[in-house]
Amino acid sequence: MPLPLHKKLSVPFTERDALARFSLGTVRFLPEGYRVELAEVNGQAAVIIRTGGQALFVLSIEVEAGQIQAIRIIANPEKLARI
Image 1: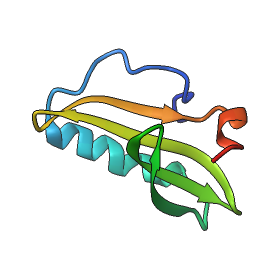
Image 2 (image 1 turned 90 degrees about the vertical axis):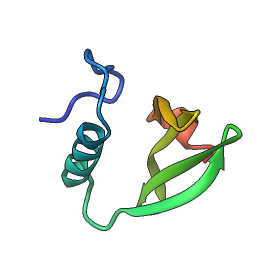
Image 3 (image 1 turned 90 degrees about the horizontal axis):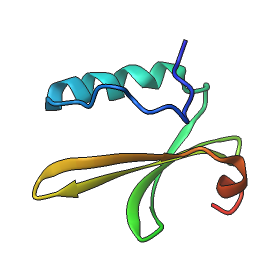
Image 4 (image 1 turned 120 degrees about the horizontal axis):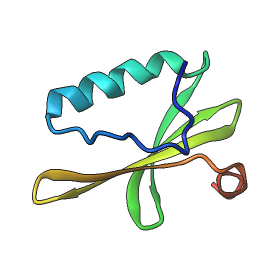
């Protein structure tokens, strides 16, 4: 069962390949027929996952000095209605 999107991971990723494995593993939870769209959201590059014309969530990754500092996911339906 996937983690609720509002929960934070209790242990940060410390290795690139661990993050990559986690990211690839979460694709199985996306609904059939989803679309990936690259866009700018809140002034940052982001990925929008859509299905049926509606945004499911927005993912942005903050990178500083070549290192991932934060991964942000917007899944609030009220906020997604404006995207």
